[in-house]
Amino acid sequence: MDHVPDRRLCDGAADLGAGQSAGGNAGSAGETGARAMNVLHKTIPIQIWADIDEGIADIVRYLNTLPGVRTHASCQGTIGEGGPVPYRSHVVASWSEDALDQLVLKFDIVHHGENWGYLYPRESSK
Image 1 (cartoon, rainbow, N blue to C red):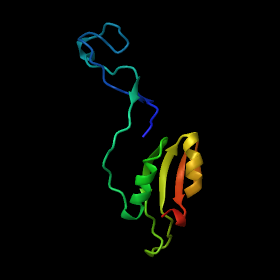
Image 2 (image 1 turned 180 degrees about the horizontal axis):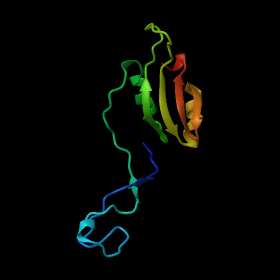
Image 3 (image 1 turned 120 degrees about the horizontal axis):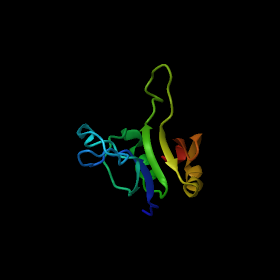
């Protein structure tokens, strides 16, 4: 899978010596290990294991093969299960502009921000 490295903001603890503060000023020995300023780190995609509802797992698996798409949450929905408010299966995802062209072919999309939202599989894409 092609992936353009991303940069994420990390809030990491500094490994400072005694008497140093995160700002570099001399401080008391009690400031050892003070928090460092936020740092940008290069990220890479890795495969992880997640528990996904059986009814949506194949769609989540497919989405995660598309360059520029990241899935964040999913549910197989409750249509046919009863309950007071049944809802469709969906995946919460983010995507690149290029990936959107592929997504609109198989999903109804409800945007909740710039390049992210709910993807509802169309019946023919199951």
